[in-house]
Length: 94
Image (cartoon, rainbow, N blue to C red; front, side):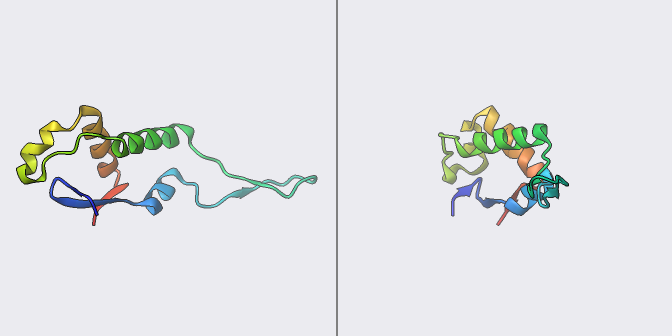
């Protein structure tokens, strides 16, 4: 497990599914096909996708021995993405 700022975090996939509200497919009543469709809020989906990409693609790792002082080396997009996901409880402490 990777430690970030002296804590272990994980991406809560169940919370993401609940937040995006994609758990239950809605059945479409069509006489010709027995298909179902899923409705997704595109804005939420794209924002969560972009925030997760930003967090997962961060290249510069802070020195864990410096503690919170090492956090100053992380980029502004990483900080905003991480804090946004943490605020919505899509990233949680382990």
